[in-house]
Image 1: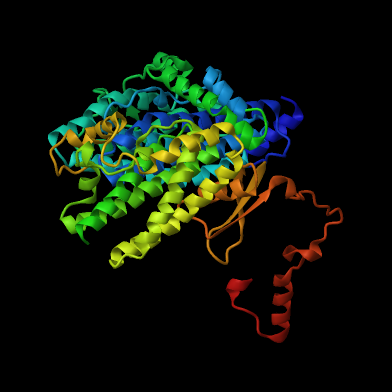
Image 2 (image 1 turned 45 degrees about the vertical axis):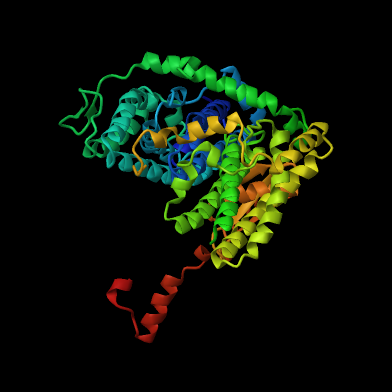
Length: 299
Length: 192
Length: 96
């Protein structure tokens, strides 16, 4: 690292922020683009598992709430891709790389949604895991990203309320409804435990070193367990990990997540990865003419 | 509210419910991200209009809006053929949107003059939201009017505006099946 | 075209930069900004302006340290203490 890069590192590590037009080390810019791009991809792909349930929503209220939630996620992807574009990578290139598999999106969006129970569990727990990561971005050294995170976190708070409402209604309903929740939880627990990534020490995590995020992976996972295991248990649900317990130092112990599964899934080998990317590719090809008419440039 | 007026309100509500679903099919896959967000609001407004209309009729009949929206048989819906078609091509979606908004404006004007103050009041509220839909439809019309595929879509869809209210396509049956599958999995009256 | 969006949270408050959108023209920009920054009723008002029309100024020159323009250029505390002592109206011990 040369002197200018070193000075930059010290600057961000003491809380300094930079704007789009400021100088930044090449490595910082590259890591930033990759990280933010993956976030944008995840918001956009996260729409696909949930949109199927808009039609199937069992009441008008749920239909509206779910449509609004999914709309927010598309909105978030718009905000995020604009930030990436101002860092030098155009939106269309991001979408090309997403569809070709060159760029990744978070593990949880590679899995199927099988029941209305999944809809509740996703809005309650998957969004909760995501919010913890997102709150750790509010002080991002890259200011344009930190600013959109504020809007994103505000909108996500509505999603969690909606999720909790769906779950509580099911848990207070029939035996079959309670079973929907437990069954969904059984399937989503492993992806949830993998969500925050492998427990790399934060000083070896470039995202933390550059203060792009303010928290390490394990810290985020512990926060999730602290917040949500009690919520899960107080409803009479069982967390499907017999080894899950809090030790004497207040640290959660758990069955080691399958990091091979995580790696395989995020590189496009999840149960729904290809289906969803295909849907995105077809939709994009089908509407290319619209973009060229409206934006008057090659799609 | 007499039976005739109830039927008219149900017709509009059914149109808005089914069209609202069809419009929300674009969520996540619309041609532009910004448009995806905008079009989703239109879909939500439509479902919201359906809900408000169902609520009025529900009160007159002693039932609930959800009951009217979901618990009738497919052949009891009174929506037009135009709204029940899956049209996942943007030129067709916009053609339908533009045609529907024009016809709906005429329909709402009549309702605004209803003797029933609840009906007139709701029609006025809906109309104010629809003004935004009309603006959106006009915006796209201006942009696409020279595209042959768009004018072809307008010609193809215009006749369907008032067709098929009594008889539905197989597409509506499929739609109804999926729309009610979760709800039908538990006894009537179950909370969701 | 990229448009910058400024939003006013409540009447009377300053307009703050909220983000940017891509739109074909002013009409599309109006629709899209209204959705992204107003659909939850979170803004009283929005200003949208094409990015190319924004003039950015981010370099200011102050070579000679113009502290007369700033509050920290004046040490009032010392002078006040001296004046009160002279008038025999010295402030309570907590002030010193």
